[in-house]
Image (cartoon, rainbow, N blue to C red; front, side, top):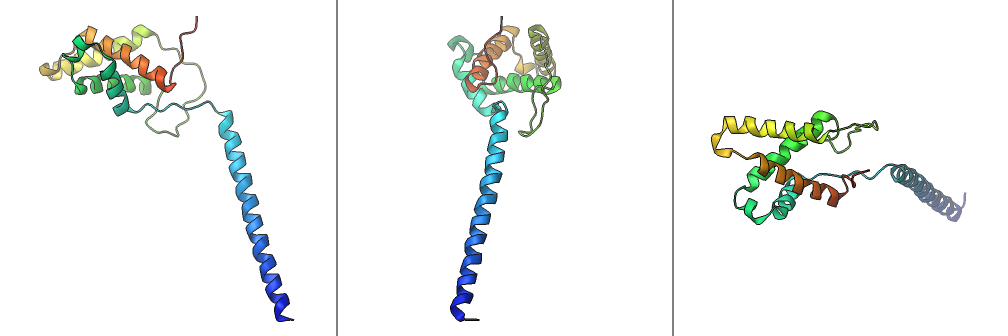
Length: 155
């Protein structure tokens, strides 16, 4: 075999390997992108970001009464409730299903107020009034709308 033809064959195999790799990568990326485009956008609730956002959205009279730790506690109870109802997961890749889950407002509020009462019984220094908890939850609704986690109320 002529030395020049061996180099040509090696060069040809190199080009074919690069092209094959590119085609495989393009098909893989394309199919993954198409699959993700069909899924609804997943909202990620960042607790620390939510605490800052909610604390900034509270009325000035309330910010003088509650601390960041109080806001974090209420939002933590709220997230616990969502996990309890199967509407949220600490794992970002968890499949929560597509079935409709109804969450009555009074059930959610009652559950969180119950957790606040339990915390107050365990630590009398951390007593939050029902009005303070409700104000934090109302401000949290604004945060959830800002990240696209919830939409507007359907009539």
